[in-house]
Image (cartoon, rainbow, N blue to C red; front, side, top):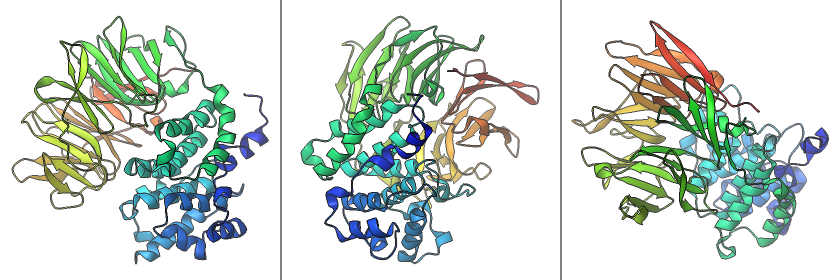
Length: 499
């Protein structure tokens, strides 16, 4: 694999080698796109319309790519702003419908397929700095039943993984095919067949890795962290590539388990529960047990939720189960979640059920709280957190952190910590706010302004955890870091598996 010529790796790639356009050759817009290679005139008008997503995908695919880059993403956004009566600098992420995010993400991916870069590398606004994969993933989450959107997202994901996982190039789109019966696919069968003729070449690179103990990691995705917990004096991380057990003292990994996209961890009833893309597992210190297996599941995977009265709930897609410890199995639970896509779910200690309808609203029991309203000023809530005092918080990826006032029934923004909220934690004296790309803000009781700790070298930070000793653990996209307070300073210890 490593001996392939560089020229082939550059020219032969998932995005540039998958042909969706030929199956739609009779469309005038496809023909025009193939000739002009520019999202202008009738082509732009078509992409801005309410045309089906499969036809838009065919037109974008027909626009093609260029080693020197293209500006079709920029042209699309300029046209969208004009159509909405906005100046280009005024348009924001929330102005884009899911289908707009899909089109923009796919255009940007084709514009710069080798780097998959955003509209601007220096911008601070979410729209201008969003990567093609982020935009298409947002569209895929909002349109779970749209095969075209899911299939193109899988191709872009494969392109994103090209330099480190050739298996992903095949596996991602194949999982979408497994998920959608032919009758539910809104992309012409000829387009699917032509795309898979190329993508199937990478199937041979897919192997099922085994459980590794006391072995050096061969998978850099085990350093890409989503969740952190403490289990029997060890720190456990759920990662892109599986599970890692860390000894805090020696700073070494004691064991790893290879899985696909593990995003949920919980210690419940003296056992470690793990939710991954395809599996729900429990580890009791000695043995692993599989409770659910879904080889066709999408990237959302199995999510563990603390339920009412100390119960354990498991969420997957639109399904909700409760664990029955007497029967040692999951039983179907009546979700009673109401409309929309539940991005996060929380049961407060006061009995209230809170959930997030992705990019649409917050729900408190059956009461809808609109985004960007007097009650909730934020625009992109991602998760809830209830601290030891019963204080409810919302982490907002666009605007930071919001604290709920039970008396006024409104959320108050933490103005000193704005933008790209990722996670929050508290102890008796501090509130810790994690920014997705910059670092940690530590708000001490009685202190006016929070202390900032720059952790930007971790790249994308998705979780933080306060252990029993009061040490702070931060999960980044290339390593795990422990912060320990030493007077007025913070020491840093790095935990990382090397290839």
